[in-house]
Structure formats: structure tokens, C-alpha cells
Length: 467
Ligand SMILES: Nc1nc2c(ncn2[C@@H]2O[C@H](COP(=O)(O)OP(=O)(O)OP(=O)(O)O)[C@@H](O)[C@H]2O)c(=O)[nH]1
Image 1: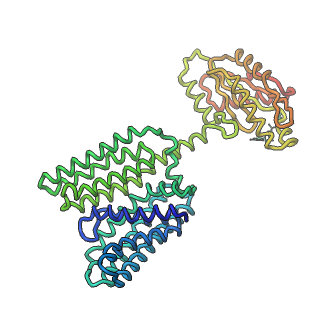
Image 2 (image 1 turned 90 degrees about the vertical axis):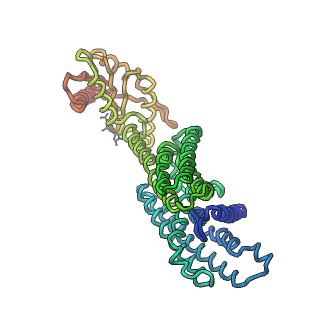
Image 3 (image 1 turned 135 degrees about the vertical axis):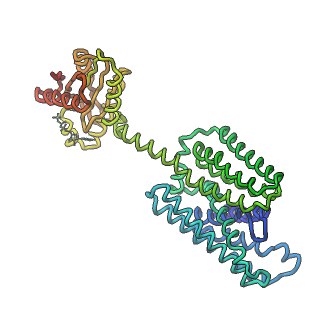
């Protein structure tokens, strides 16, 4: 591990500990405990290398170095601090490494399932850390009797929120800092690339969220009614707005900022009586945000699948499915006196090219032919790869005579391709049909196919008009 990574994680651990203590509303009880997130993300991103910076970070704060230097060395405290650091590091180590395994080994699992797994791992990890940490205080010291039974719930909740709020943002920072390439992390941020880099809308939404928090807290401190604090749950609206419309990295950042404002606000606006309500709001906000990021991600996955179904990978021409949809749309919106025609053509002796020069050359022929023909197209025409070496040219507003001429023109323009060292003259056999009133796309294609076969039988490189 690079020394800079060690120093960064160590310093982050120590500083987030002091930041968290500002949000503590009772001894050992923080509204949200940031260092838990630092420990978890260190193991998640750095693997086992996360051990030392986390361990020394927690040892540094638990041993209270300042007091030890000023007031004399206390070996019992050192032993307790060592034990405490060890159980914390091992709990988060187990959790972070399990999450790493879950996300990296089940890459094919759907995103919602990955997130449910991640949340379950977080719940168990924070519980383990709370129980083991409190056990050290209860059994290794004399000052904290029954601390497990009185403190476990709030400790667990505070750690859990810290863990799930800090992890996404820190995961991005740590991968950037260490230059690690983790494809299983990238899937969460996949749709970020498609969104704009304009930060202004994000800033406006975030400001709306922060104003909401401050208003509710001010109201809460002014009005003597425990119900006022529950308004904080309305924060779900701006936060979800951000999650649905902004990049995942920004949604994670807003979760971090919003929850920090709430946590600091509880002390600042003196609404500690309602701390547990605010803590639950944080908790729900965090869980909800996690789950909500699956919505834009799934929408993007859908779009990619649609693209796959619409564009042929090899030639980038519309697929049969898309052509059928487009042609049917044109026909549906046509007036009765409008004529449309279609040509189906098949490359002559294409199997020979594959057989003589290999399928890679065959693929290049299909690609280059598509590219050449695309440049010949009129604006209204649709060229698609129908199947194998068969293409369909849809010619709206052309009757059969005009379509015949147009097909002849395309046939004559079939190119001579130069692929590697080869010079390959490409020829095709065409079947032309006029779309009949009330006829379905598949029937039109069948008639065109019939005419194409006739063109082949007549010696190829010909245009035949279907009757
Ligand atoms: N390289 C390559 N070949 C393909 C692809 N799809 C289909 N083919 C091949 O295209 C050939 C089509 O051959 P046919 O149209 O039946 O026969 P042909 O040699 O073109 O002869 P005629 O059509 O009678 O002139 C077959 O050998 C298929 O294996 C593809 O995506 N890439």
C-alpha cells in the first residue's frame, strides 16, 4: 500500500471520529457514526490492505494519546484500546471483505439484488461492531456496567447509518486515489456517463433539500410539539428527485451532505429531544436512496437492450424488428392514395466469400457494403439488415415503376470492395414489391423474397418485380 493511501485513510478515520463526536447526543451515541463508513469502505475498496490504517486510526483515538502524554502512561487503557481497535477492525474487515466478495463474484446478479445483499451485509456488520465494541467496554472496564443492553440499539443504528451513507462517496474517492480499476463498482455509476456535467440543477435541488432541513429544525425548536420533527421525512422528495435525475456519484454526495446537515443540526438547533426521529429519518433516507439508484440504472439497462434490439451490431443498420415497426408506422399514417414500395436484396455468392477468405472477410463485406449503401440513401428511405446477407430497402412514396428504377440504380451502384489485399466486386439480386393495401409487413416481405429468388434463378445480379 502506498504511504499516501495509508495516511489518507488514517487521517480520514481520525478526523471523521472527531466530526462524529460533534454529532453525539449521548455518551457513545452518535446520530451517525462516520468512521464506521470509513472502515467499511477501506476494506471494500482496498481489500485486506485496509486493516492497518483503520486499526491505527481507531487505536489513535481510543488510546487518547494526548491524555497519555500529559497524564502518564496507563497500560490498562492501552490494553483496552488495543482490544477495542481489534474488534472494530475485525468486524468491519469481515463486513467490507464480504461485501467485496458479494459484489465482485456475483457481477451478473441484477442490481436490486446486489443492493439488498449490500444492505444486509451492512446491517449485520454494524450489529457485530456494536456488540463486540460494547462488550469491551462492559467487560474490560469498570465504568460501563450494562452498557451492552442500554447502548446496543443506538450504537448499531448510528454505525449503520454512517456505514451506508459514507461508503458510496468514499468508494469513489478511494478508487480514484489508489488508481484501482474495479469493474464491479463501475456498474453503479454506469449511467453517469450519459448525464450532463452541468452542476447547477444539482446545486439547486441540494439547496432545496438543505433549506427544507433547516426550516423543519427551526420550526421544531420553536414549536413545543413532538410531531414537528416528523416533517423531516418530507426530505425524501428532494433526495429522490436528485437520485432519479442526477448522476449516482452526485446522489451519493447529496446523501452525505443532507445527512450531515441533519446530524449537525440536531445539536445546533437544540432539538436533541427528537434525536431518534431524526436518526430514523437519516436511516430511511439512506436505505431509500440506495434502492432508488436502481431505477435510473435499470432504465439505462433497458435503453441499451432496446438499442441492441434496434441496431444490428455488425452493420449498425436498423434490425428487422425496428424496420417492421417503422414501416408499419409509415403505412398507418399514410393516405389511401399514397404508394410505398420495398426491395429485398441478397448478395450473390456470398457463401463463397466466406468459404474462400474466411468469415472475418465476410463480416467486413457486410459492414462496408452497408456503409457504402448508407451514403446512397435518400432521406426518406430505410435500409436495414434483414438477415444474414439479405437487406431490405423501404422506399416510401414510390410506386412499383419508380421503385423498380430505384432498385436498378442501387443494383448498379453495388460497390467493388477492397478488403485487406482483396478486390471483391459485390453483386446482388433484387426483388421489388409495392405494399398492398391491408397487407402486413411479413406478407410484403414474403412476396419480395419470392421475387429475389426468381432473380437468382434468372442468373443473379438482376431486379425482379413481384406481381
Ligand atoms: N461472414 C458472415 N457470414 C454470414 C453472416 N450471416 C450469414 N452469413 C453467411 O451468408 C451466407 C449466405 O449464403 P446464401 O445467401 O444462402 O448463399 P450465397 O452464397 O449468397 O448464394 P446466393 O444467395 O444463391 O447467390 C451463408 O454462408 C451464411 O453462413 C454474417 O453475419 N457474417
